[in-house]
Length: 437
Image (cartoon, rainbow, N blue to C red; front, side):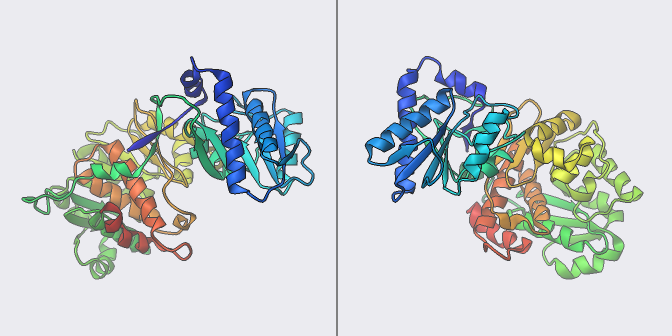
């Protein structure tokens, strides 16, 4: 279900007791092999090497490339490939002026860049970038991937990531990358199930002009294999929702409590509205209903922590999380790991921070990272689809943290099956059954 994502401290612990020279030789060979494999026509290879172990890996790579008949140098002019070996996993903060100048020269070289372990300037433990940073085309990382290669903004500078075996045994890490194995945890319908026991979701939302949001969430819940989906919406929106949704039961918000009696999970917020009445309704449902709930979109607006009787999953994007934390969205983008952990501390529940890397955090647990998906997900309505999937998995009885992580992964994989350009949210819904199969 998961693969490890190492912090700098976890890598240091994993390396203890191993022959340092042997590890560096293997690391350098892995970098040299990557250069030869990916750029077979490159004749002149330049390396920018720091004074630490990362620089040592780079110098070994240059030696091996020279033995393979390539011209190697520290001069970047005219290089066919540049090896970035300035900083490794121990780097934190802002590069000093001389290092920043070297990073700028690397980025200005116009040659493909192969980074050793991480692009210089990326914090291995967080993905944060506080100053100058190398834009790598390929990163050869040692032993296993690092947190900073999976979480933005660091991941945006890594390019393709190759993981090199340098003779270290696997070990536990606090934060982990989600793989397709997590989808095996999603309960399947069994002989003897009814539409209610297979998962009953109540979606609450859909004000005038945003009825599409609640319809997308409801359809996604069905395609994520829920057995029963009901929608509680504004009275003026009901005719539109009635016409758009065939399989779901529909009723006005005034009847939300009646519909809730049949629900094994709630999905609150898509297109709901942000008025006083809507905020009061959200607060009451979260306080009073003893079933798990996913809280998204308008339901996150001015949300306050509460003593909730059942699991809650908040699914903000960066802007929504910034408002919840009293920060700017730019701060969240720059400190995604810290931001999602701060939200967990504030609200005491599972928080799913959407983005190119989706982070799922829960009290007392490490962060689960899903990198499934494509840039095509940057289109209206995809968040509503995710809400419906989370709701369906909660309704099936999954643990809230795992339900959120599985939903994020299924959502991303659905995008990967869709068109590269012109994807719309409904395309994800259509792909969900194939992903879950």
